[in-house]
Image 1 (cartoon, rainbow, N blue to C red):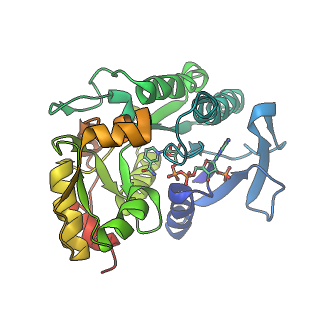
Image 2: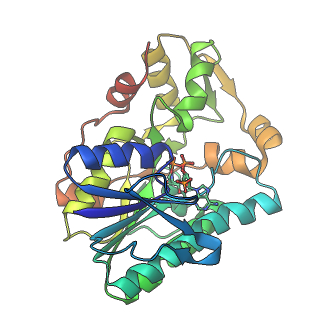
Length: 296
Ligand SMILES: NC(=O)c1ccc[n+]([C@@H]2O[C@H](COP(=O)([O-])OP(=O)(O)OC[C@H]3O[C@@H](n4cnc5c(N)ncnc54)[C@H](OP(=O)(O)O)[C@@H]3O)[C@@H](O)[C@H]2O)c1
């Protein structure tokens, strides 16, 4: 299968490129600079420009674009950037998928769409919730509409917290936990919808290879855990105690709405669509996922 990937230099994208190539797929990277080799094509999302011929023979497009959600405080300008860096590339790609009759469009989203869902399990049929991230995800998913209207198979990748040694949430937490600063956040009852990077990229490949699946798909491990459980599992994986607790008001005072939505909102998201389709998870428990990615 010939797969075109946008956002391929990131945590998920770079691992996905290697994984798909190892599985025998023909991968093209869509880059926001001059192409550096025969496997790259150039584009400029704000100008809606994509190199001529980019979609020749392409069976599927995977869209992983967006500036980092937790990299900077959510000022008004940053919120606009978080939104534009997702909705604009998605609209441009969806229109191109429609124009060129590409069969499948797998486009990014996140479990943040469920807002603060408390202790209830949320599968793909759950309604979206409140807050900045939920609204962002609704707009982001809506930007794929043109591809859907043109009859492409559109899969909305509602990613959970991707666990990898190389970055993301664990890239920030691991040094703290190793330095004896591991702590429960707030009351610790909020659910954290984790997934290992291996399973995340394995799931994207599975979705590429299973044309019967479309629509929203939760990319989360089968057994989401509370923050208290996650804290204990990470402490065990790095062999350190984690007896501290950071009160919710401290997180809100120091990190504002970003801290509240990213660290205190609860999403007990379950991967119903992946499990119904028979995706074989490698890491079923958070302990398995953490011991696979945390070097001791
Ligand atoms: N990692 C997680 O835990 C997680 C959880 C939920 C959702 N997600 C979503 O999944 C996607 C990929 O995540 P990731 O962790 O791999 O992110 P990442 O490491 O930050 O990579 C994101 C990629 O987006 C592209 N990008 C950055 N700014 C852009 C802009 N202004 N316009 C267009 N493209 C831009 C870049 O690719 P190029 O430089 O190659 O263009 C970059 O490599 C993101 O949309 C993210 O929000 C990730």
